[in-house]
Image (cartoon, rainbow, N blue to C red):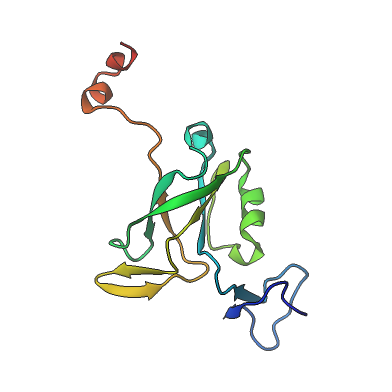
Length: 153
């Protein structure tokens, strides 16, 4: 089989003698000028509050609490999907790596580079790493939060 575009094999996801089924990911191929993409799953009830493309969100990679960085949203899905559909979107090789409870909306972001810095050391971002995306969906002053009636004045 030939890859549809030139690139470098960045991850081999099978071992010798492993049985394969149609649709199984065998390798990951990175394009030379490829962008590092992060797929986020937000609770479905946040869909009306999530902005469109070019919104900035914050990413912290799991295991690296001081790796927080701003990333740019490339797209926000128009539909809210159930956990099974979200897992199909992420791919068969992610089964068991993530537990979803309830409907979600898919948000695709782009990292500024394929590396990140934590504790003063630069690390590479690898396919399958997990983290937390945070988006500012509402803003209110502390006083408005404590006295909600002030928001309607």
